[in-house]
Length: 272
Image (cartoon, rainbow, N blue to C red; front, side):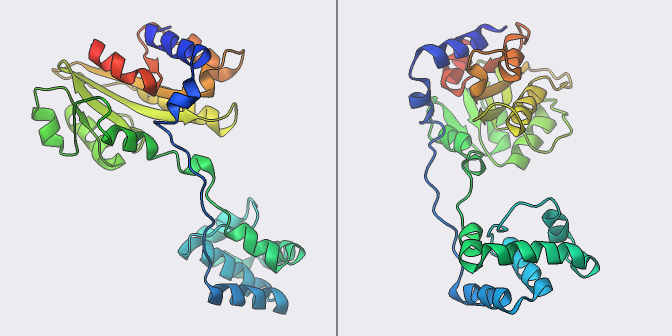
């Protein structure tokens, strides 16, 4: 495996890795979402009056317009969310969902609807926020032309669309996925781009997150005049030494594939 991947594994297993990582991904305790008193009264009335169809419509509207949470997980809810007309055509599904609400009661339903965002939903922008702090001691810009024309070490940090557009227009990036670029920099005349992931658990969707980062690193690049290096900026459970899929992905990567912790990213860039 690449030396920087090896260093990342050593960092995670021999030093205060999580304490340092908190500077990059400062998790905070999320506050409950809010529901207006009027909406609360309306919900209690729907439950008391046992109006199944209107109750389900009301809950879906709260999710869609008020950014609340459906009170429980159910595979059919997202379908109704995306097609309200299906509510009238599927009375048994509506009755089943409403029955679950009645069994929960108004207080428990309200509590479930206003629960905070899950931690993994707040991770996305944290890496870019960290970059914006200027932690590498070089300029961070959001103007693509300024970034490309600069002869200095420099970092481009902007929204997903702008970063993908710059990478496609100037750096030969051609991966189909519209999202996935969290980092673009130019150090010593070399361009570096990659996707940043904090993998918080073993298995499931977290494996998919790791696959995304690796997929960006391994994406085929159109040849351009400048040297472009695609990397994977990975933190979290993949560095735990075990026989699981995540760690095996790291240890089986080739020597020229850079899978690196964000904590070593500065050292890597200045070594180019």
